[in-house]
Length: 318
Image 1 (tube, rainbow, N blue to C red):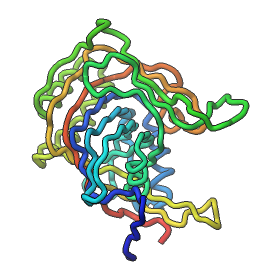
Image 2: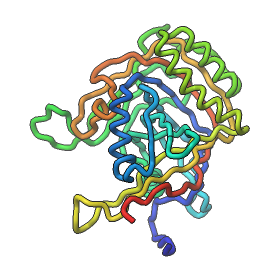
Image 3: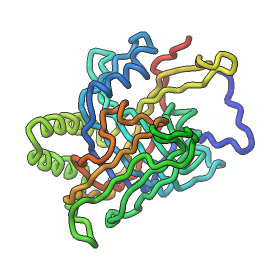
């Protein structure tokens, strides 16, 4: 391969990148497995000629409001930055080979830092876009969590791309001044508490919830570190044939928890509100409802992560 040409002002960071002191608000939402499967088919299975076999094995997606205190490039000359990242993750079962593997794909990803947007899109193939949001940096926050993107509503008469609310999360029960939480002091304890929580769900919800949790628990038992491959689709639009790709490849990179600091499970109820944007067909892609729907499970996690050097799974146009 040719040597990468770095230029002044280049914002694509050198992997692996450290995500130190990362805080997550995590919300589990019920979508639709058939619609999630159609999304995976469109992005991965069909373009690769079914060289990969990615399955949506749950009806659920995970919305994460993330704040990274310190994003560090592997090249010290690029410095470091703090940034926010709001993503909607789809659990994926990779059945390409004999043994199935658990992976995650970020169907939507909104950030507030141009370097992480460039790195995420160019290097990791994530569908990152710039946006603005209201996002807490501590588990005691009791306000709304919001995401605004450049887009337009499905019923817009002008179709002008303007800052538009994509979704928000609202605490819908509990005391006015303080969220009710259960303190968690280790990752094993967090998984155990989540299993206990699942027992209070309906039979079908509990079965699916525990299935996804079981995959994460298995990964933790196989290694002292929790590491999950994050899927991406690297893609460059062709300059001449504008409906075709000059380059297209399915890629993945390990997202590894390097150190667990703390976690809290929220005992209050939360409600997720999705707006109908023509530019962001979240409902069609995931099966989530336009308007309000109840959050199935919510927690806060504080840990150090690393997004590692990835690999090409399948070059589609070669």
